[in-house]
Length: 160
Image (cartoon, rainbow, N blue to C red; front, side, top):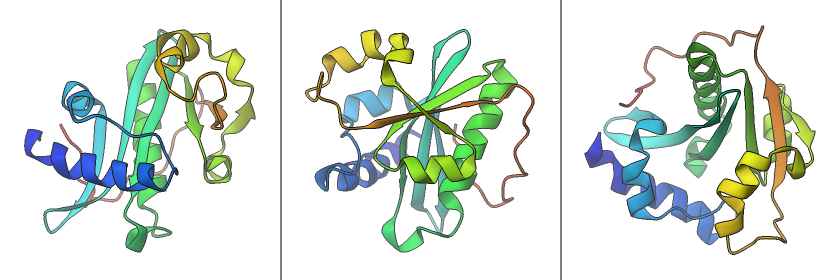
């Protein structure tokens, strides 16, 4: 919901202040709100993750953030799995992320790759980033053509 965006913005940018992820502008979140999945309990957003389609065969998982007190509870994994399911439903079978936490993604089945193998991302977004060309994020990718993830928890609030 549009009313969730300010809470999402705050959560993402709390991690950005600690340089654990890139910051997101409020207007960027409003423009991309349909990309987001949220995990919510008692009207409090505990985790967020977005899936952004970049090309006919390529999507990006971005802005994955889970409140610190809720980490290691499966929220992040479920959000990523929901993004993967969405990609498959849309017919996009390669999903990547640029991350400071590559081990998290490797546990789910992603593999490290060189960022230069993602020209759509580099030419579309990375050139505008203040960290370019000295980006310190690691690229990970998963080909999901034949994989199906587990059922998402029934109390996962999926927006929109």
